[in-house]
Image 1 (cartoon, rainbow over the protein chains, first blue to last red):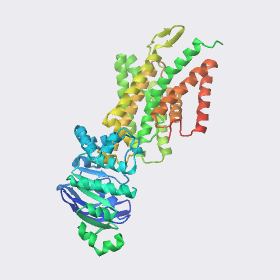
Image 2 (image 1 turned 90 degrees about the vertical axis):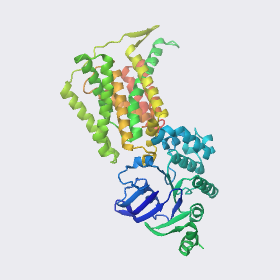
Image 3 (image 1 turned 60 degrees about the vertical axis):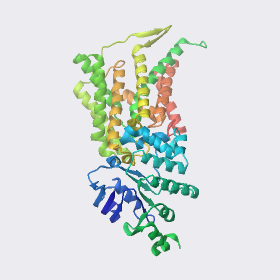
Image 4 (image 1 turned 120 degrees about the vertical axis):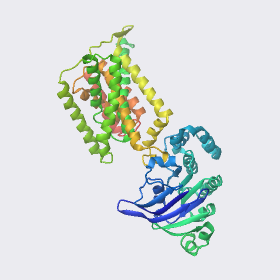
Length: 232
Length: 287
């Protein structure tokens, strides 16, 4: 479904990604793991065109995303849940969801029903300003907002960041549910142990380069990862 | 003085009418600032352009007044869009002081251009609306009309901003500009639409003002600063704050003018403004 071929990118003089190649197949949940500052967020921002790649090619279902401007990527079927959720704090929950359906207004009601079915808590709080939600609820709202566009591919940037440990558990349960619904998911996480329980495959990104890839089991068993990230 | 003074009531009601007009005037400026984060110092000069266009289309070219006014609103929208594309866009990421200076430059440009093109004479539309009597009180029909239109315009804008996708996007973009593309929204397009809307509001204000005042190249200076102060008083970018501030300001002018002298009304209003700025520099409803 999604393929990156030797993609490089950066901000000004600072290069964040060096020839990254990766593949996400339809219906698959894939993780990109790695330490802080490895370029994980930049990787997702390149896919949704918030950052223009300086080299390499990104393809969605075989079509290059190069000519697609950032604001048309979502209509191509890629929804991005950004780092720190980035809800519109003074809009209500439902208005946030409405913004998610901006490019597919005709299907707003049916998708709203679907999202409320998935997250009944959001329906209870539909008229509340998003900024007043708890961290976990905000993450639900951010994911719901992304699902409102009816994506083929869902990009999740650190869904567990900044949440209390108990909430982290429920967020990963939620991500697992979304994967089980048949969405194709590319998830970026620092919480390696948790995310490897959810996805089938993963890539290890370090200093802007893919250092390792394989099934979640393989990565969990890898000496390198155990030593550097799992503290075993 | 009696406890109940009919002329005091008249002054208060006139203040209310003036407040509606001032609220409309501050609306466009607040909308643009709230969304784009740029202050159109030349806002009152856009209104002047609108007033001239109503005047010339109606008096010189004999267009029906309603049509001339619609044209002025359309021209306002076009001017707002032009201002954004050619003046604001290049300085969108510049320092605020530079943004103030360029729109200040446009102010003097428009003033000078109007002087060159139309001369310095005061031009009167020649339409006199009657005054409406209510008991012993009398009100100018032009003011009543301005109040009604201003209120209708504000309610329409409220529904547009709260009920439509585009309106929601306009509110959203002022809260998080950077992620708008992820929603499928092009920020450049929203900025263009907002600027056209701000310009159209200036055009609408022009239609209401030209019924009450003569137009001349410096007319912007007679109400531009007041409109700007109202926006700051309410909290720059906060439309509800501007709305409240407009009515408060208008009461100072009307009631202060009733007890003392018209100019004293303005003095009191500005003193009030300065006091509030000491107390709440961010404005009544500012963050």
